[in-house]
Length: 405
Image (cartoon, rainbow, N blue to C red; front, side, top):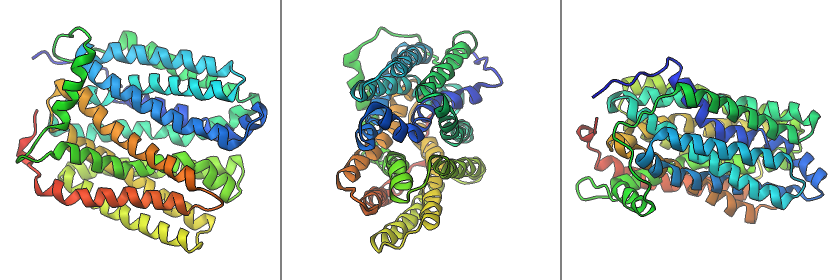
């Protein structure tokens, strides 16, 4: 098999590609009150675009993953990035909240369509026993985006909210300028004709994957999605939680939101060391239990109305930081179950499970939120309990020798 000639910055580029979603999401959050006032709508009306974005991003990944297994990672990446650029530019020119909500879904679809190829490219390029630290490196680079994106968003507001989306256009254009001439196609088998009917078969091979007759892959994806979905629940309601419930300003919000991202980066850095020393599944299980304890504490204090800003922010940073270990450890074990030619479909199943669980629970919390953060905490608790319930069956049927190189 021919050795891939990868540029030295390959993992940095993949991290920047995966960051396409956080850049589009997090730079936008501090602008919600300003945009709502400029467009003459409530913040709640415009906040629906957050959930719309998450759904669109998941849909793009769901289609882009298996298509990248068919026609190649690079083609899917280029198409998705171009769609993201066009939609972002259209948002900057829009004057209607309804139009923006629709275009955000299109923007998210393009971002998800492109960025899902990153995990598949890691699986293509490295043996299964080496992908753990590589995934952690990609995610660590990606986690820089939630730190700086809200700060960029706040700074760009002085030029008008449209400047935030012009910045997103510029970011995606830089990615495209690197991608087209410098990043090689990592898929090893020859591209095939696009077949929409084959997509269901590709997903079936992943979801119906068995170990000892049990659907362990499907259980694992759901377990990982439930635990990591807590991050999405938080992102969906971060603006309400900090700026409405605790009444802080845009600058303070950016600092607290960035604090959670710093925690994620630190946890990702820690995961690179943990995955070199311990089995991925053991790391995954230990952190899920630790995260559940934090969620239980957060929910109990929210129910008792005993959360002040400092305590709430501290617990949130710790809960969210756990995802910085759960994601790379989970990805290492899950992606290692499948050969590289199924990498796009497997990555889509893994990532979309997080978006479905996170955005779904976030929408449920939105229905019941009224001058309280207890509904948000309860949705986090439900998500965490589900991951705990699935964990024993996954560990019972773990087969460490069954990885595919």
